[in-house]
Image (cartoon, rainbow, N blue to C red; front, side):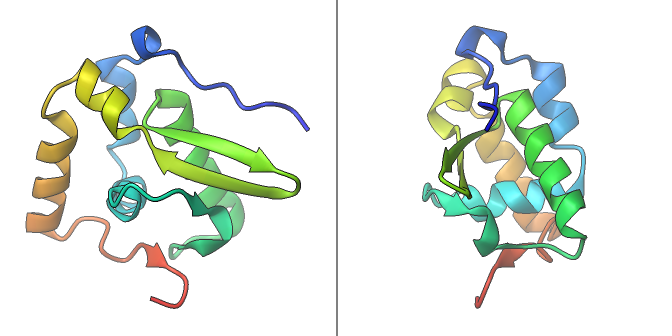
Length: 113
């Protein structure tokens, strides 16, 4: 399978990150991943088709917000919290706090939760 591209730290741009975080589904995914745990794609639940969920995950990865790892036929995703904090100090926490205050992305969660 083709290896996913992850931008290096110096390639992560503010406009790309902000664009990736401009959708409630993607904000919800970031909220789910904010606990620092790597999650299998099958664990993630959102009110969209699987192909659309895959698109949202790709947008986050391409912007440098998440990192994807493939193991056999399974894909795992994690938030690049340390990289984002290094590049844009305080941005992720501000987005997460505002999203919680405004209940943005609350309809995204984990299977069985």
